[in-house]
Image (tube, rainbow, N blue to C red):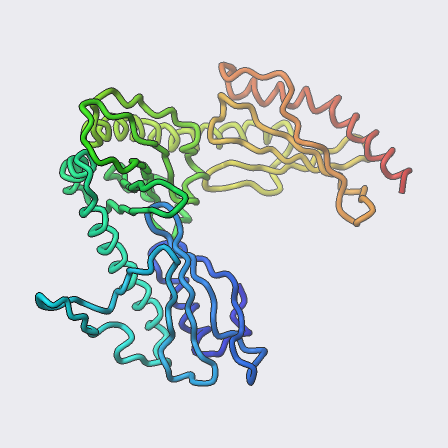
Length: 379
């Protein structure tokens, strides 16, 4: 994102926030709120990750009064969230407490980061308090069994048109996935979470229904391991999270270790293609998910892109041709659709996989050549 249109001190604070916040923050709806400096952006919306979802907070600076601290507007559902007011005494008097806005210094690029971290910590405490006050025996029991686990986040949602429910985001597995990947490019620690959603009831049921479960992960982890492909263990009658989580973590630990070993399997496959297709023009050196080769069929030269999923070799590679000599009406190179139907068996040796793809490409490249020539005649 370009920071050129923000005032210099806002740009510096945003840049520091995005590069030092421990999770990925997004910015949207950057805009100007002053008629005197219409080209200078001084307000925006932050999408802050929480409980495997995003909170939208509006950050409102004032270009006309740059020394003033920004205002923060929370979501409509959080109208009772007053992070910098504390209640004292039996009368319930509210008093402003010292916070990140108290001694605001617009020249300090770290101040917005400090503010966001403080507000998110207070929001987490606010949600924990809300959930703890819910009159639901099952929820109280669930919380008591997992309260010792680090990093759990919870959120109470309610509204006029939707039932009350409590959502938990439970970090899984105490393992450093980043260190398991050689030449790891990830800036943030990669984590897998179980999102658990309970409807809020008023009476304890002897055998309540299973909560809604969804496995989630940090976005970058999908280059190594797809949680969407994991079949969750069944939630048995009468089970609680403290019983369910160990079985799930054991399964995930085994799958993550297998995913790391599959990096070398994909690398060996790409290396096996090299004697047949030539050295790759480019290849993914970390996860080995893609490689591109220059293939010649007489005077006809094409690029072959090979895409490998995290399920390779169970799932065969997807192939795509790209002409180096033919272009469409928009000036873009002519490409083939993804090719996924060709002879394949995950039980073959790596060398046989490479041989069979090479044999398949002989006829398929001729078909693509005819397609390119026909397309060229149309233009």
